[in-house]
Image 1 (cartoon, rainbow, N blue to C red):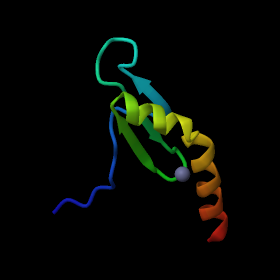
Image 2 (image 1 turned 90 degrees about the vertical axis):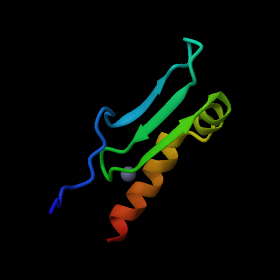
Image 3 (image 1 turned 180 degrees about the horizontal axis):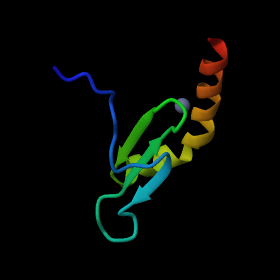
Image 4 (image 1 turned 135 degrees about the vertical axis):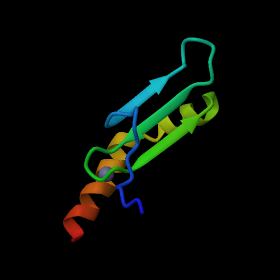
Amino acid sequence: MTDQPVLITGIRAGLHIRGIDRGDTPIADYLCGRCGHHHRATGRDEVTTFLRTDPVASHHAECLAASTAA
Ligand SMILES: [Zn+2]
């Protein structure tokens, strides 16, 4: 019986973008160090749209609202 917490390995908290300059498929990862929320955008269009929404600021607002609501 495994009862381990969900752990996303290889991604550190914050917003990370890779592959954007190398001709690869761009990938943007956002991992919230506070609540563990993770979002991944894959592909140039999706990454561009994702970044345009300012994911860090918009999630911080949600995250703070959720933590203070408790
Ligand atoms: Zn959060």
